[in-house]
Length: 296
Image (cartoon, rainbow, N blue to C red):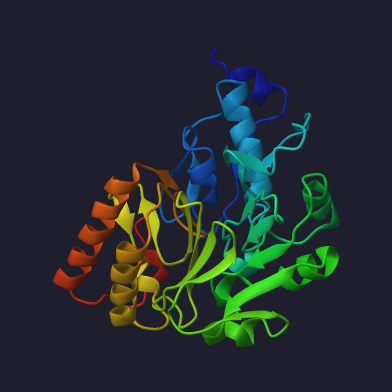
């Protein structure tokens, strides 16, 4: 009898519904048990141990359309926010209004940061109160603004966005302009990177963490840095220039995107990979808009 058989007989088997939108979140959180097939996430098998069970619980809480379900049974205590490194956390609780975008919490002595936002609930907000609240909400671009106003009002947080996407967050009081970097807090720099949208921004923290929104991500398929070239709403040429500028100005060892997988590599390796990505983009023709063509 397999390790998963008692769970099935007790009516506690996991399943993923056909309402999955293929946002990739479950595969990021539970790669041992969740895989892609026919443009959606499916279960490869039931979890084999407690670690895989916890990973699926996290995937279920993060799923923006509640496609992941399990029969009755205890739920782990506070699986989110999930520490990624030092004082950087993955928020989970992804929102359907941002197509399941990841958001991040960064604890800072000058005030905590929320990079983009999870879906708003009072319980999610309460979990941040226990970590010191939120002083700044850093929005990477217009697609990820859905819940920012609720979190800002609750915590009295300052909201940052670029003027190019300001119409998506008219309540934002801290407006970035042009393409020059701006220091948000000591060790925290906003770097405008127009391309995916006119007002796209990445935020680099402590020359270690780069929160990239929809500008840059780690592709498991390619095992390399990639861009969402088939989901460019503004300008491919601008994106190439933005990536070159980012490579010239910043160093970081973590890529933490809104969509797509995260990665942690030596800073010089990521620098070289970023330059190689620009060269690949310059050597290949533009691609038509097609969300389904993204290579996760």
